[in-house]
Amino acid sequence: MKEDKNLRPKSKSLTKVYREDKNLRPKSKSLTKVYREDKNLRPKSKSLTKVYREDKNLRPKSKSLTKIYREGKNLRPIYKSSTKVMKEGIKMSIDKTAIIHSSAKIAEDAIIGPYVVIGENVTIGHRTRVISNAYIEFAEIGDDCTISPFATIGSEPQDLGYKGEETKVVIGDGTIIKENVTVHRGAACGDFTTRIGKKCLLMVGSHVAHNCVLDDQVILANLVTLGGHVHVGFGAFVGGMSVFHQNIRIGDMAIISGFSASRQDILPYSKGEGRPPVPRGLNVIAMKRRGVSQEVRTATNEAFKLLISEDLNTTQAIEKIKAEIPMNEYIEKMIEFIQTSKRGVLLKTHKSGHESLE
Image (cartoon, rainbow, N blue to C red; front, side):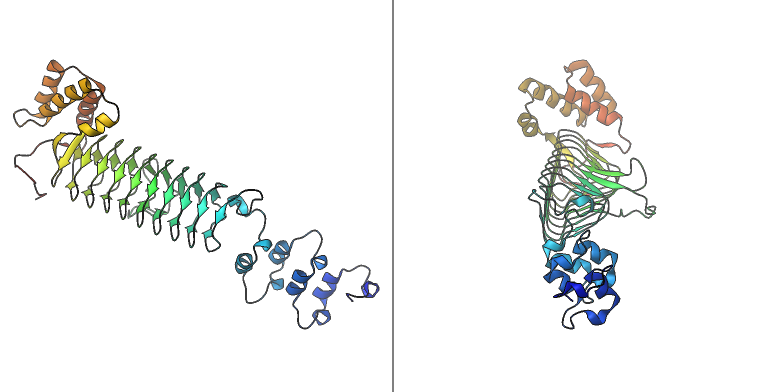
């Protein structure tokens, strides 16, 4: 019939003939193979992809449509839902082993590595790299980010009250997520969101629990653990293997030594050391790097010394600061931070050196 078109029924194409009578097909070839070898035999209005989708019986029995796509890139649709996997003219790098949900939105110049799993409601920005074996769902990730192997972003919160509500993670531009980091999406409270700012660095194995907020340029060293609803201020640095109770705040530009733990808020601009990390001094280096003048640093340091003084309680220290020291935005921020604290601010200890939590 292929050689003599006059033998075909006038009202039927060879495709329809093959479909209605399997005995007419070449014995050594399935209809799929016939289509592959001779594109002229395919329905003119349909690609092989569409034919496979509409009639599952035409697919090779041993292969799913997914496997067919992986083996033959030419068989993939030009557009794969909103991910635009095969958009023409754009150099998108998505490894063939990656699994991507149809609802995901991936920038044209993003890079998705081997065995990455991208689940529901994910947005990935321009030039962001997701390296092998990462897992992401219910997350909005900005431009120029790096997600390292075995990082998990947007999985369900460790909250017994969570009942599957639609919550999410938001990550700002330029943030780096290292290996084995976990960032859980929000629980069903507040704004339902876990937020990580711009240009943050989350080192190996650190954990950010549900509804945490990390402002821009925060650094969490290896194995830092933040409980739910922790707020970490701009430019703060948290040392490795430190643990923080839910709902506490870590102030702007605070630096905390490794292996610390706290149930109370950490004062902005302080250098915390010990367990808990009692303020030992002002983080002058961080302030200097961010362009704070010598005059302002000196005044802030004087106010800081009064706040941690063993000779004054907190109320007396604040009154003395307002009476004797020229105010600036950093002093005002420290005072406001103390006055708005719900769990209390770690300011002083009656013991010298490192103090345990006992």
